[in-house]
Image: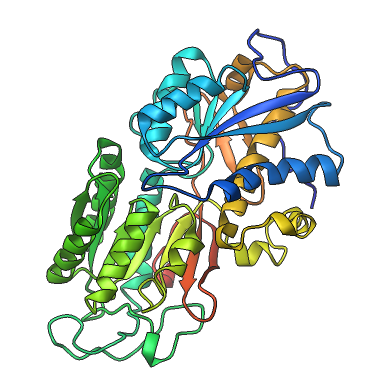
Length: 440
């Protein structure tokens, strides 16, 4: 497989002025991520992951972008919008474009900063509200609003018709568990840590969304509610402060158990999601967990929630595929080759971040190739607004135009296993929905 796939329009474009971050031999990109705070991800793994694609491209394949090497500046936004804007302001003095990665409030803040200054800003999809009128922002993966109906379809057409096994009897209401009908595509564990998902009766379910209390999460909440209402599935919402804390995690775990929530959809930072799962398991309560696709460090979260199988069987609706599939050469053989070439730089605890960042940078590569040999910020925005598409083979296909800066409609579904090494397996690739089984 070639590294560049299905490019949009190629060739040099007119020089429209601002080419900050571009020299005769280099292009510099700016990436902000939270190394600290509730969304904190591993700094070393992120920095190495941000460079992995370009190192492999330049050093192993000998490929340059119109004669230039690409460098990435990575800054810690501390999971705080004001800090994110400060870091984006610093980076725009020396970088061609800005990249977000984790944290919707920080992504929104930097997109708002970049737009009036004409600075291209790209990130995986978060919410659409507050970003839909930003002329320089483009989402590289499906937004939460687009993921919401996919999640609802998965609950209604996959989970509800196929209740799993209860780990223990008397988890809710003192009732014995129903007969075990495993859903998982990976082997179900033994009785000590069995598939924890359990519906009292086939065809009934209550979904609980756990989300921060900031307005950026309102739209996906509304979309999920509407989609579940259409299926007649019960819905409850549990809001927490943005960072979350252990007291709130215990309170929410207790309330969800009392409310009889069967499926927990988390749209919270990794630290809080982990604490919540530990608390539900500590209560002897094992709902099925589903996650929107911007939870960072999937495998790291899972490693902390497998002692009782709290997240065994959880699904993440992800922009990028599972590490276990990529390591076997699926989706992009160049990534598995890069993993082998730079094995000493790979942090086993944050492997999935490498997949995420590889896909992010491959998107940028194809854009820079399409932009031509005289890149300018305004020309990149114009290129995308004219109507542009490409395929990375890693992230779902990207297609945008002036009327739609949220041009991705598919996700990967990764499924968690606590059997052996905790990890997410590839369940579905580039899926756009879950129709009823008889219509599939």
